[in-house]
Length: 480
Image (cartoon, rainbow, N blue to C red):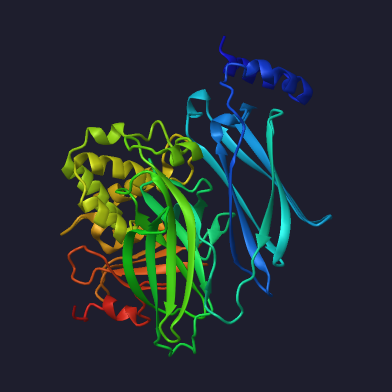
């Protein structure tokens, strides 16, 4: 029997009779494999306002462990509820409950190793608390409750200090504020603290507090050193020291380091900051685990955790890359220059054919905008923009390398384009308008040389070329 379509029929015939539908669900989905219901959990602490501490709680769980039921709009859906209670002594200090929903077109989209993520933040006075966290499958009786004691630390008001480290599955710059938004970044947490198989880059986020900063004219610097320490505290890898300018009294330390060559085992990621104006030092570190297939896994690692769960998509798999030549792989990765990190580009250049195939799979997977689906929407959209740029903007160089191509890849399709054709008074130019980027921004492109190549001469976006006298380039009498 086709249980899926039978479920749809029941759903239609019993509209308005939800109890009957609920009674039918165990039968309708009895063909689904039963999985142990559990979730991964971690936390990180940051400085809050008014001497309080911001505690972030991160949760991930296997999508296939949830119960999917018929839904009229998207065929199948599943949902889980997260309930958090915080006690201090006998008093309930805070509590929060929220729902998380995922959809699927059919059973084939519910595949192994897909992870769903959730997080929440609480501002607490430093002290000792007891946390009770329950994750409930909304369409079954499956649930998991975890209770633990946790000390909320205080951060120095004057001396240089650092937050705890948040490990991430992926991070990217973003302006859309949601549960994963923080200081201009979209950060998906990694509550397992596992890296290696499927996660070759260790992404991290931390904050620095109380740098000595006297104002915009302050030219003093601070130094950051990142290291991987082994389980004995010895340096396993040193990424060197970087000297940075101070953005203010506080700064964000964010990025990714390559752990692809590290053997399976238990490690610590260590960040040390030195204020070069005062010689004050602050340091923070966090334990993580590396698991790689093919390594000899010692008892310590094997006993701690099974193979880590990583986001995976069946359609978005190694298959599409195994048939590509190294030149084709290089060409695809070259188009990512606007979104890839310097570290990622260095790693890719050193890899052989198979290494590049695996790297590209993981590169796009880390940026997947919706890991719950089988498609990698982010990759498809990005490469579609590159193809469009090549078709419409190519002249002396590929379209994605032009100014308009770069803006299209980085910011997406504009909401409105104002095109001014050539005339006796002006050269042709375009104004691209984005209404939802940074509160509304514009990009100005002019065909300076008359060869059909539009060059950017001005933008109102942060970090872009800014020239309020941009109209001088449009005059037919102006010299390039």
